[in-house]
Image 1 (tube, helix red, strand yellow):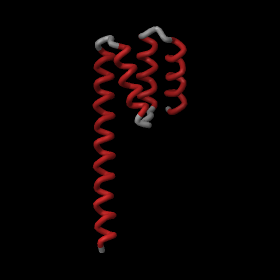
Image 2 (cartoon, helix red, strand yellow; image 1 turned 180 degrees about the vertical axis):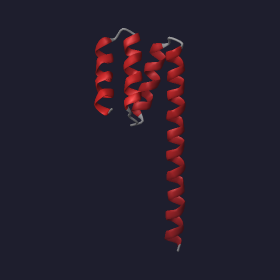
Image 3 (cartoon, helix red, strand yellow; image 1 turned 90 degrees about the horizontal axis):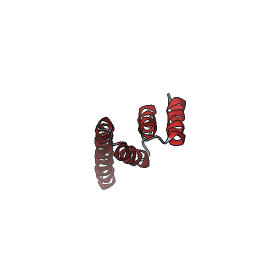
Length: 89
């Protein structure tokens, strides 16, 4: 019975951690999008990369990062992330 309690508690902790982790990534993406819309491309790049560092990936995330690099006139990195977006989509 004690083992079952520990498993249930551990499950709730893991679920809570994953939800918080996802919420943090959503917040970072919103901040990155806001920075991009204000033409703060360096900031947007840093924030998008923070999301990638958390092991989240999506075609939209790669596309947005590619766009930020493009606007920042870093064509090699823009192409890299546009290709990654294309591959995932």
